[in-house]
Length: 89
Image (cartoon, rainbow, N blue to C red; front, side, top):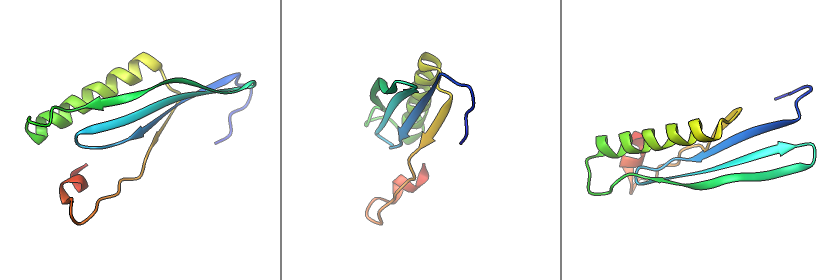
């Protein structure tokens, strides 16, 4: 990705999961990279899968709104045969 005449670019990286979704926001500037924020969004494990997905969706939307990234990077999903429910993501 080429970005011309930009002083900084903010990138949100997401590591998806049904129970816990991790994220990190990094800002790249002419002076170098800077960590803006990192954390997790959790769904309540005792809730239905539908409710957990909605909780994670809402949490990720909140992170996007709060951090205003220019770019979003989503980790490729890996689903092991012992955990086929992960493939639902």
